[in-house]
Image 1: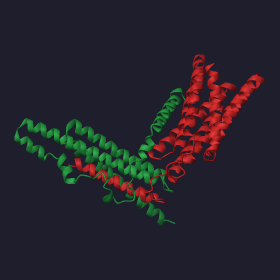
Image 2: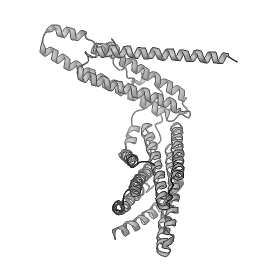
Image 3: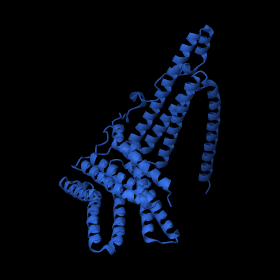
Length: 185
Length: 253
């Protein structure tokens, strides 16, 4: 039997969703611009809005090294504050760009006749991972500042690479297995 | 006195809904919904007549009409899906699978519960069954609304009204049936005051939203029809991977 709490939870969830329908959130979402059909360069909606060298500069320790050499607490304080603000804006912009990519995907996918649930789930998972990464990055910048992220980044990067390598090995093994399977009578 | 007023007011609103539906040709757009309203109207009158002239038959009439109402209610959920997603075959496919899964689960669960229950008490069991079916309808509506919101599916005033009113009615029914089966008479006593106004509100929402026919807004024309889904999915995956690379660049050692 479905428990009391589960039943109340679904009623509450239903009422909350109805409230969002009542307030016209669905319609508001529909008003958002759709850029589908244009190339990424034309639409200008890619997450990569800022040149890579500037991004690297925001998070690099070089400038901080220079400012530290000046031995001025005021300059240091100003630099930290400004750099942190820029980094936070960059993370927010990137996150908004990723949301835009997803929204454009949903706008086009909803009309496709051959929509696949598994592919949709994979894309959504990828999107959730990226949004989570943006959230973590935002929190790290907020707490430690952009310069101190390096240590954490080195560790995360190494971990990500080893996972990617393992995935590639598995995929290659799968392809080899398929080829052998196809060859056999 | 107030309850009497609300009851007759509800009958009047149901009649008004039907008249407006016929005059505005809404009955052709939402046939199942108007069949449901007609049924609810007839059900109320039939129950009243049975209560006055043959009160011993009242429980049977009550439960039979209640279950027919639940069955037509499932049709209303499917109608919301059919009308709302008619221009969105991809999303409709996801919704169809989702609804099919929810209803199969509901039927399976109902049969399992009934067959496992050693004490067959008609009133309690029928109430439990109705509760399960209403909860499954609530799940189906939640899934539909979530799909509508995720895929930014626009719905017109009429469909929005049906969804709001029916969703509200289902949420209230789940609360009532949950506490009605597990709590004592105190809850039932208070609910007997709360239930009629909440149903009256549902009817008022329907009457306000279904006063005249309003076509559902068309999706933006810039979206190309007949897109190959694989192409769209591949493009999105590539763009998300680019975004991942871009994010990594920020903290790459």
